[in-house]
Image (cartoon, rainbow, N blue to C red):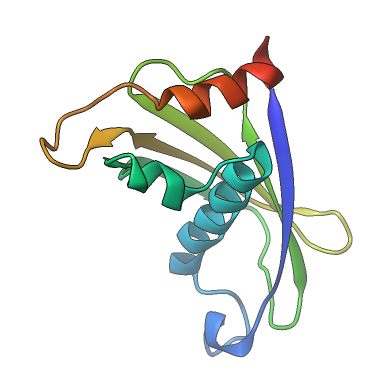
Length: 136
């Protein structure tokens, strides 16, 4: 299993009239967590794209437990629970406030796609090698 944590301060533009984070922004939090997770593995989205591989989101689920509010410092915990297989990678997200209360959970599935053919492809070997350090 591979787990990372990233913090984000909630700024005013992320909130609705009630000072609560608008639900549509949680997908962005998941993306921030994924981007930083891949970076902590020792790779970047930019490097994956340079190989001619894109990673579209194909499925997303979100569960709202408590609100995040203006000026909160939230922690995005991003987990890969299993070694990605074939063309698919699944990221699990948990968002916590400063009191360590769980605010939101999410799951995002992405496919590895050949940018020229737009067909599914295997995970880049370079990324697979780095992930194997965490999964054995």
